[in-house]
Length: 126
Length: 162
Image (cartoon, rainbow over all chains, first blue to last red; front, side, top):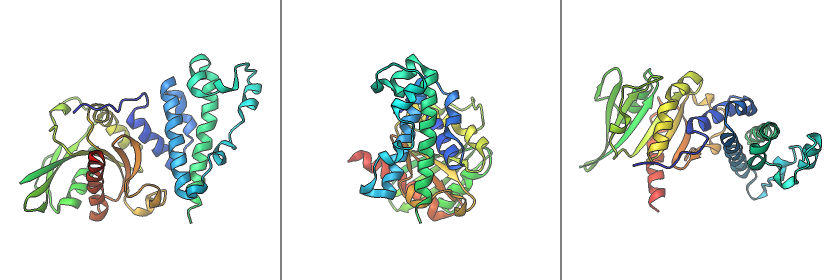
């Protein structure tokens, strides 16, 4: 029975993300050891977990903006990096291939914000 | 008699025996690397649990020889020991990439107070890691906690049938 669960981010890495997250570690510290496509999948995996936890706590009142507003706005980020690309392209899936250093820096900030949000959800469950 | 089989992997140590004993009441046979327990559900249905020790850089076991009829795989690591997670990682990836049966990654805790988040965030279905792969916290000495893991495997199989 052959499977099809072979993305770029291996299963054990996803377990390590949870291990790191729930031991209070910084998820951004895992980024440098991953290849570009795995970094994008790490971002996606953590986003899914953040939304999952947010919905568990907020229910229908969950709004993704309560997470994204803690992240540096795209326009500000691009200005800081003197980037002339269209803002639409300022995301991991695109820039990770043309400017991986810049994209990784942005993704590192995002994953730490998401981890922080997850802890807020956990701690707000009284 | 119908038999369901579950493979339980853990790093060297007695986690697999504890987990299986917690479900089956007794270990019917065991050696250094493998143990076996049987859980009789009723006269026509029983569950066989095979515990297998995983060493780091394990190369001597032909994992593809494991029964293709296995209902699901359980990978146990000690929550407070990242080396134990490191030990099972290659075998975990192998089964995740090559087989579609449910996989439960089980973070073993000595006491429920060691679990860093409330149960509403991870239970009873666990945290989803991938298709048919779930992450659970479990106090493997507690039969109720351990049996929930087997129930979760059955739940995943039933979800897939719908």
